[in-house]
Image (tube, rainbow over all chains, first blue to last red; front, top):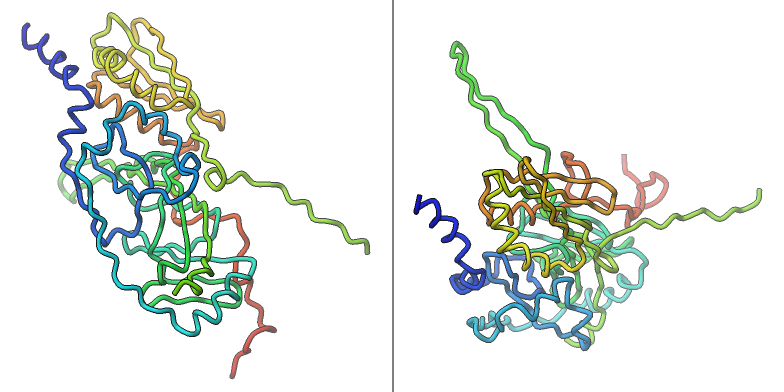
Amino acid sequence: MSRALLRPALELRAPITRLLQSIRPKTVTPLLGATATISVRFFNQTTQHVEQPTHPNPAVVANATSSLASQRPPLSTQPQHQPPPTPPSTPLSESVRALLPALAAQPGHYITIHIHGVPYLVTEGDSVRLPFKMPGVEPGDVLRLNRATVLGSRDFTLKGAPYVDERLFECRAVVMGTESEPMRVKIKKKRRCRRTKTVKSKHRFTMLRISELKIRTEAVNES
Amino acid sequence: MTIKALQAVSVGRNGVGAFVLQCKKMDFHYCDWAGSSRGMNGFIKSLLPKFAAAHPQVEFTVSPRPSKHPVIIAHYINGREKAVCVRNMEPYDILKKAELLRDASGEKLRRVTKPVQSVNESVRGIWSPYHGNGMRV
């Protein structure tokens, strides 16, 4: 009797703040192709890598969950991640310098972005269904995609070796939500054995919408 | 022949300009008598206030549904509803179901083979045998 009363009390006793303090900070590996420009999540288990917004008006960059700002613990209490040291920037090649403005001047562009090594050929406004559920993101989060192999227009194509220089483009995607496939049932049965085993699968997938694809011609002047 | 303008109907692309969460309302039904609703009662007391405060764009309703299992019903912008029965679940499991409903769009579940879906015409144009370098035979 007492255990039945104690168990629900134990479950309700642990407040959400305990969950946040028990999280071990995770370092962002350079293999990840995307960085998230979002604030700390309230119910999620993984700590986020947050890019400091360089936009002059921070209210524009903040997403829909900015109302959470007053409730979450201040970011200074969490250990600060040192950003990975940026490699020395290589100069752009002559063909890139000469033809990038022409590529940018054309009306339509496409880009082959890589997310965890998998390529997706997208234009602005496309929706991408990733073959996995991305942890630690909520609908409305903005991801800055920095791995691309091909950036092209109708008459010009910029091929990366192996990736296109990050300074040449800006590609942002908004997390739309998580979709699910219909339930699949696989029945496993051997011949001359009556026993059947049923296995159910219902995978979840993260949906992204490519909100921005911009070619930075000023990178030619900077380098 | 007179030249007529082509009518271009605008297609909504949620996320390109502003992002609108597809879930607009969530109903939480509980029961005071049923044992299967214990987790839901605990969820409503402990976790629901913070979840609702974190989503000001969603309308939350809490109402008793006596002698029935607890259920969460989510209403979406495309007019469809999704109901999830949360009988005999713990409060944190119910929270995961609520997050599942919040992340979903109201579309029916369907199997999608291609990852990218686009309404834009092709950037490099359609191939034509009369243009380009031609083929040497």
